[in-house]
Image 1 (cartoon, rainbow, N blue to C red):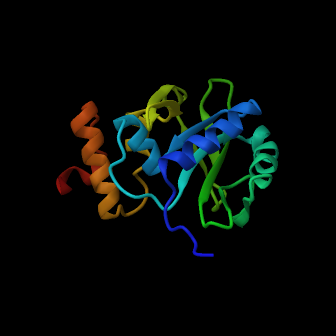
Image 2: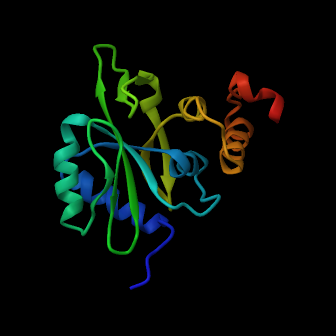
Length: 175
């Protein structure tokens, strides 16, 4: 069987539907999160990045395991990747919410990344289906702390042009 190298809109909708049926909230992040905000697919995606409350991680894994997804790398409480036999990947970022509603994500190096509370209010569309995603401002924030690729710069440019979100300070001279 040939492995898929991309995950498509229909795949995203199917995954969200499965998780919603089990009362598991997720927020799209990364490339699909940006495309959801833009309400159009702008490029091919090798995976879907999702944020989920850490208390729902085990339940989420069980739901997706019933659909053929298996742990491919990593593990909670840091990010991990689930992959099915077709090669579709779900990159999971577990968070715990603090008393202010900020999402605290434990990175692999042991440091915490803080998603601001208001970042979880994003709404978008994937193939005309309403989805939860990070806000444009928070998506822009997520492009900091590493050297962005060309696709990352394209995403930042699209967020800036559509929503007027300021570029991260360290990259302003690159646009």
